[in-house]
Amino acid sequence: MEPEKTTPELEKKQSKFEDLSIPLSIVFAGVLIAGAIIFSDPKSDGGARAGIVNNQDQEETTGVPADVLAITQEDHVLGNPGADVVIIEYSDTECPYCKRFHTTMLQVMENYGKSGSVAWVYRHWPLDQLHPKARKEAEALECAGELGGNDAFWKYTDRIFEITPGNNGLDESQLPLVAEFVGLDVGAFNACLSSGKYAARIEKDFESGVLAGVRGTPFSVVYNRKTGKQLPINGALTYEQVKAIVGAVAAGGAGTK
Image (cartoon, rainbow, N blue to C red; front, side, top):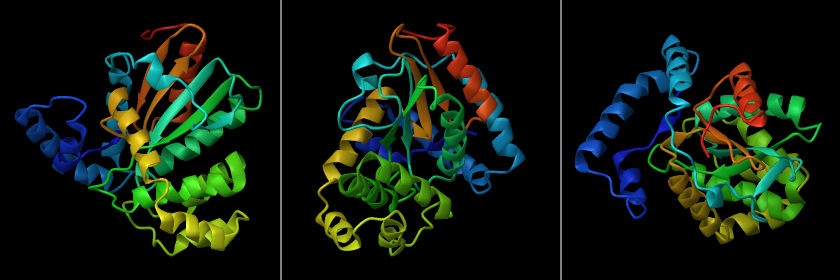
Protein backbone atom coordinates (compact mmCIF):
# COMPACT_ATOMS: atom_id res chain seq x y z
CA MET A 1 0.00 0.00 0.00
CA GLU A 2 1.25 3.51 -0.84
CA PRO A 3 2.28 5.63 2.11
CA GLU A 4 -0.18 8.33 3.12
CA LYS A 5 1.07 11.57 1.62
CA THR A 6 1.92 14.96 3.01
CA THR A 7 -0.10 18.07 2.13
CA PRO A 8 1.19 21.36 0.66
CA GLU A 9 1.08 22.92 4.13
CA LEU A 10 3.23 20.17 5.55
CA GLU A 11 5.64 20.51 2.64
CA LYS A 12 6.14 24.14 3.72
CA LYS A 13 7.23 22.87 7.11
CA GLN A 14 9.77 20.62 5.47
CA SER A 15 11.20 23.47 3.37
CA LYS A 16 13.67 24.41 6.06
CA PHE A 17 15.51 21.20 5.22
CA GLU A 18 15.20 21.16 1.42
CA ASP A 19 14.17 23.49 -1.39
CA LEU A 20 11.00 22.28 -3.06
CA SER A 21 9.76 24.07 -6.16
CA ILE A 22 6.22 25.35 -6.65
CA PRO A 23 5.51 22.87 -9.46
CA LEU A 24 6.48 20.01 -7.16
CA SER A 25 4.09 21.29 -4.51
CA ILE A 26 1.33 21.32 -7.10
CA VAL A 27 2.14 17.74 -8.01
CA PHE A 28 1.94 16.70 -4.37
CA ALA A 29 -1.44 18.40 -4.03
CA GLY A 30 -2.68 16.52 -7.07
CA VAL A 31 -1.39 13.24 -5.66
CA LEU A 32 -3.15 13.91 -2.37
CA ILE A 33 -6.48 14.63 -4.03
CA ALA A 34 -6.21 11.65 -6.36
CA GLY A 35 -5.14 9.42 -3.47
CA ALA A 36 -8.11 10.28 -1.27
CA ILE A 37 -10.20 7.55 -2.86
CA ILE A 38 -7.52 4.95 -2.27
CA PHE A 39 -6.86 6.02 1.30
CA SER A 40 -10.56 5.92 2.19
CA ASP A 41 -10.51 2.13 1.94
CA PRO A 42 -7.26 0.27 2.72
CA LYS A 43 -8.83 -2.92 1.36
CA SER A 44 -9.61 -1.45 -2.04
CA ASP A 45 -8.15 -2.82 -5.27
CA GLY A 46 -6.58 0.59 -5.81
CA GLY A 47 -4.55 0.07 -2.64
CA ALA A 48 -3.42 -3.35 -3.87
CA ARG A 49 -2.26 -1.86 -7.15
CA ALA A 50 -0.38 0.80 -5.22
CA GLY A 51 1.49 -1.96 -3.42
CA ILE A 52 2.73 -3.29 -6.77
CA VAL A 53 4.07 0.16 -7.64
CA ASN A 54 5.90 0.23 -4.33
CA ASN A 55 7.78 -2.92 -5.25
CA GLN A 56 9.11 -1.12 -8.31
CA ASP A 57 10.08 1.89 -6.22
CA GLN A 58 12.35 0.00 -3.83
CA GLU A 59 15.44 0.36 -6.01
CA GLU A 60 14.81 4.03 -6.82
CA THR A 61 15.15 5.54 -3.36
CA THR A 62 18.57 7.02 -2.66
CA GLY A 63 20.48 5.92 0.40
CA VAL A 64 19.61 7.42 3.77
CA PRO A 65 22.62 8.96 5.57
CA ALA A 66 24.13 6.60 8.14
CA ASP A 67 23.86 9.18 10.92
CA VAL A 68 20.09 9.36 10.38
CA LEU A 69 19.85 5.57 10.64
CA ALA A 70 22.05 5.38 13.75
CA ILE A 71 20.15 4.14 16.80
CA THR A 72 20.32 6.53 19.76
CA GLN A 73 19.36 6.22 23.41
CA GLU A 74 16.16 8.12 22.63
CA ASP A 75 15.00 5.54 20.09
CA HIS A 76 12.40 2.92 20.93
CA VAL A 77 13.71 -0.49 19.94
CA LEU A 78 11.86 -3.81 19.90
CA GLY A 79 14.10 -6.83 19.67
CA ASN A 80 17.87 -7.07 20.00
CA PRO A 81 19.36 -3.55 20.02
CA GLY A 82 22.61 -5.06 18.77
CA ALA A 83 21.05 -6.85 15.78
CA ASP A 84 22.88 -6.44 12.49
CA VAL A 85 19.61 -5.74 10.66
CA VAL A 86 17.31 -2.98 11.86
CA ILE A 87 13.99 -1.81 10.47
CA ILE A 88 13.55 1.90 11.17
CA GLU A 89 9.94 2.92 10.72
CA TYR A 90 8.47 6.42 10.51
CA SER A 91 4.82 6.19 11.48
CA ASP A 92 1.63 8.12 12.26
CA THR A 93 -0.80 6.53 14.72
CA GLU A 94 -3.83 7.88 12.83
CA CYS A 95 -2.66 6.64 9.42
CA PRO A 96 -4.78 3.62 8.38
CA TYR A 97 -1.88 2.16 6.41
CA CYS A 98 0.38 2.47 9.46
CA LYS A 99 -2.27 0.54 11.39
CA ARG A 100 -2.09 -2.23 8.82
CA PHE A 101 1.69 -2.20 8.63
CA HIS A 102 1.97 -2.36 12.41
CA THR A 103 0.34 -5.80 12.29
CA THR A 104 2.80 -6.85 9.59
CA MET A 105 5.74 -5.67 11.68
CA LEU A 106 4.50 -7.59 14.70
CA GLN A 107 4.58 -10.70 12.53
CA VAL A 108 8.08 -9.83 11.34
CA MET A 109 9.28 -9.53 14.93
CA GLU A 110 7.55 -12.74 15.93
CA ASN A 111 9.59 -14.58 13.31
CA TYR A 112 12.87 -12.62 13.42
CA GLY A 113 12.94 -10.74 16.72
CA LYS A 114 13.08 -13.72 19.06
CA SER A 115 16.27 -14.97 17.42
CA GLY A 116 17.86 -11.55 17.84
CA SER A 117 18.49 -11.18 14.12
CA VAL A 118 16.27 -8.12 13.53
CA ALA A 119 15.46 -5.04 15.59
CA TRP A 120 12.55 -2.66 15.00
CA VAL A 121 12.94 1.06 15.64
CA TYR A 122 9.78 3.20 15.86
CA ARG A 123 9.97 6.91 15.07
CA HIS A 124 7.14 9.46 14.98
CA TRP A 125 6.13 11.18 11.76
CA PRO A 126 2.67 12.75 12.34
CA LEU A 127 0.93 14.07 9.24
CA ASP A 128 -0.39 17.19 10.93
CA GLN A 129 -2.63 18.46 8.14
CA LEU A 130 -4.31 15.08 7.65
CA HIS A 131 -4.26 13.82 11.25
CA PRO A 132 -3.99 16.69 13.75
CA LYS A 133 -4.57 14.24 16.61
CA ALA A 134 -1.54 12.12 15.75
CA ARG A 135 1.06 14.45 17.25
CA LYS A 136 -0.59 14.39 20.69
CA GLU A 137 -0.93 10.62 20.41
CA ALA A 138 2.79 10.47 19.69
CA GLU A 139 3.40 12.43 22.90
CA ALA A 140 1.19 9.89 24.70
CA LEU A 141 3.46 7.09 23.46
CA GLU A 142 6.46 8.95 24.85
CA CYS A 143 4.75 9.45 28.21
CA ALA A 144 4.02 5.73 28.33
CA GLY A 145 7.69 5.07 27.72
CA GLU A 146 8.73 7.47 30.47
CA LEU A 147 6.41 5.94 33.04
CA GLY A 148 6.71 2.27 32.16
CA GLY A 149 9.88 1.88 30.14
CA ASN A 150 10.37 0.35 26.72
CA ASP A 151 7.88 -2.44 27.36
CA ALA A 152 5.11 0.06 28.18
CA PHE A 153 5.94 2.13 25.12
CA TRP A 154 5.39 -0.83 22.81
CA LYS A 155 2.29 -2.06 24.66
CA TYR A 156 0.78 1.42 24.45
CA THR A 157 1.62 1.64 20.76
CA ASP A 158 0.08 -1.76 20.07
CA ARG A 159 -3.11 -0.78 21.89
CA ILE A 160 -3.45 2.57 20.09
CA PHE A 161 -3.23 0.83 16.72
CA GLU A 162 -5.74 -1.78 17.91
CA ILE A 163 -8.43 0.71 18.88
CA THR A 164 -8.02 3.67 16.54
CA PRO A 165 -10.30 3.66 13.49
CA GLY A 166 -7.63 5.72 11.73
CA ASN A 167 -7.94 8.96 9.79
CA ASN A 168 -8.02 11.09 12.93
CA GLY A 169 -10.87 9.03 14.39
CA LEU A 170 -9.57 8.28 17.89
CA ASP A 171 -11.16 10.33 20.69
CA GLU A 172 -8.46 11.96 22.84
CA SER A 173 -10.33 10.80 25.96
CA GLN A 174 -9.15 7.28 25.11
CA LEU A 175 -5.51 8.11 25.73
CA PRO A 176 -5.62 7.84 29.57
CA LEU A 177 -7.79 4.74 29.22
CA VAL A 178 -5.06 3.12 27.16
CA ALA A 179 -2.58 4.12 29.86
CA GLU A 180 -4.72 2.35 32.43
CA PHE A 181 -5.06 -0.67 30.11
CA VAL A 182 -1.29 -1.13 29.95
CA GLY A 183 -0.89 -0.68 33.71
CA LEU A 184 0.36 2.89 34.01
CA ASP A 185 -0.39 5.45 36.72
CA VAL A 186 -3.15 7.43 35.01
CA GLY A 187 -2.63 10.56 37.10
CA ALA A 188 1.06 10.65 36.26
CA PHE A 189 0.27 9.92 32.62
CA ASN A 190 -2.21 12.79 32.38
CA ALA A 191 0.28 15.17 34.00
CA CYS A 192 2.95 14.11 31.52
CA LEU A 193 0.67 14.45 28.53
CA SER A 194 -0.72 17.86 29.51
CA SER A 195 2.79 19.22 30.11
CA GLY A 196 3.72 18.97 26.43
CA LYS A 197 7.23 17.96 27.52
CA TYR A 198 7.68 15.61 24.56
CA ALA A 199 6.61 18.00 21.80
CA ALA A 200 10.24 18.73 20.91
CA ARG A 201 11.03 15.01 20.92
CA ILE A 202 8.29 14.36 18.36
CA GLU A 203 9.53 17.21 16.20
CA LYS A 204 13.05 15.78 16.34
CA ASP A 205 11.77 12.47 14.95
CA PHE A 206 9.85 14.35 12.29
CA GLU A 207 12.96 16.25 11.22
CA SER A 208 14.90 12.98 11.12
CA GLY A 209 12.27 11.63 8.75
CA VAL A 210 12.61 14.63 6.48
CA LEU A 211 16.34 13.98 6.27
CA ALA A 212 15.59 10.32 5.53
CA GLY A 213 13.42 11.34 2.58
CA VAL A 214 10.04 10.49 4.09
CA ARG A 215 7.14 11.76 1.98
CA GLY A 216 4.31 9.80 3.61
CA THR A 217 3.60 7.08 6.13
CA PRO A 218 4.42 4.39 6.82
CA PHE A 219 7.98 4.67 5.54
CA SER A 220 10.72 2.33 6.71
CA VAL A 221 14.34 1.57 5.97
CA VAL A 222 15.77 -1.93 6.37
CA TYR A 223 19.42 -1.39 7.23
CA ASN A 224 22.34 -3.75 7.72
CA ARG A 225 24.61 -2.02 10.20
CA LYS A 226 27.50 -4.35 9.45
CA THR A 227 27.57 -3.97 5.66
CA GLY A 228 25.81 -0.62 5.24
CA LYS A 229 23.27 -2.11 2.84
CA GLN A 230 19.79 -0.63 2.97
CA LEU A 231 16.45 -0.88 1.21
CA PRO A 232 13.36 1.28 1.72
CA ILE A 233 9.83 0.12 2.43
CA ASN A 234 7.40 2.63 0.96
CA GLY A 235 3.94 2.03 2.38
CA ALA A 236 2.22 -0.94 3.99
CA LEU A 237 3.86 -3.86 2.23
CA THR A 238 2.80 -7.40 3.10
CA TYR A 239 4.72 -9.72 5.39
CA GLU A 240 6.05 -11.71 2.44
CA GLN A 241 7.31 -8.53 0.76
CA VAL A 242 9.00 -7.33 3.94
CA LYS A 243 10.49 -10.78 4.49
CA ALA A 244 12.07 -10.66 1.04
CA ILE A 245 13.56 -7.23 1.68
CA VAL A 246 14.92 -8.29 5.07
CA GLY A 247 16.48 -11.36 3.47
CA ALA A 248 18.14 -9.29 0.74
CA VAL A 249 19.57 -6.78 3.19
CA ALA A 250 20.71 -9.46 5.65
CA ALA A 251 22.50 -11.29 2.85
CA GLY A 252 24.07 -8.13 1.50
CA GLY A 253 21.81 -8.23 -1.55
CA ALA A 254 20.55 -5.41 -3.77
CA GLY A 255 20.45 -2.05 -2.10
CA THR A 256 22.37 1.15 -1.48
CA LYS A 257 25.16 2.14 0.82
